[in-house]
Image (cartoon, rainbow, N blue to C red; front, top):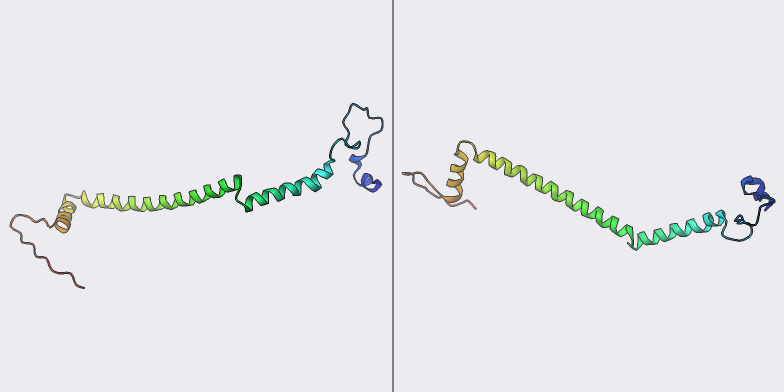
Length: 123
């Protein structure tokens, strides 16, 4: 004990302390060293078990990170689809030629006097 008191002078007991003041030396509660030596590793162990078992805030954190990854992937897909639709709008809006081409290709429409010949696709 004398070695600890010499190494850590702030832990020396003060003489003449009144009985009204709380003192850890009299056994009223755990010393700060006890809290650090026992309490902190116990807290770290409890947090580690919670993390391992996916309990408490760790489960919420993991699920929110997974949700964020899924949402970012959905955003990328939607941005790609949006770019394709913007290009299609741009193609269809140029003087009506895009609309006419789509009507000919997809619906088989033709102008008056035109004859449509469909050839079989190559296999």
